[in-house]
Figure 1 (cartoon, rainbow over the protein chains, first blue to last red):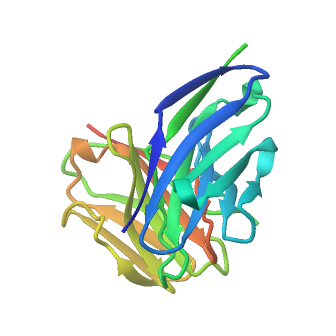
Figure 2 (figure 1 turned 120 degrees about the vertical axis):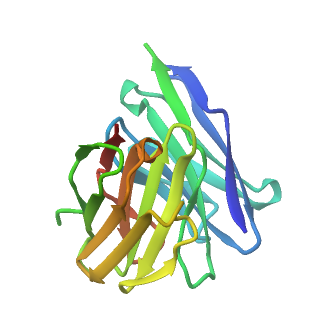
Length: 115
Length: 111
């Protein structure tokens, strides 16, 4: 069974400040891990994904995430927040060796940016 | 590439009516997924297909829900009869490798 837990349903940071969104995963098989972003009234857009090539994964819009097996974590960071980063962010997991590629999503973290 | 196309974007219907949501996946993608998003339950996987064959429908909430994929370019999610608690945003997504492309969703309101 696989699952992800996102710590904090709402995170608020000042413009220009560090963004840190936390995600811990549980998986009985080596996982693939993802971060998705959802802007209001839109579908989900892939930010980045971890597939074991490198533990530090760089994504779009300046975001990156680091896979830490010892901590079962895959936290999302961005050095300097921009107003346009305000959105809902979802961490997700799927099994690497599963013949089925279904992805399980976390409950989401709403990121607000203060001017 | 037009992406994953869902229709309609918004649907308002009365309780008891049949509702059909439609999805056109990206050409060449062999997986198709239906998700439901609500404030209370977040993103729930309802059902997914591989090469037009349903693989896992364990997320379908009740027998009132059914999904079909008659060919590689079209899928439907039907609710009959609809109930107010079915109100949600329904997303379709397709993929050919790990990492989906989502449609813009159908916002369903059952009154």
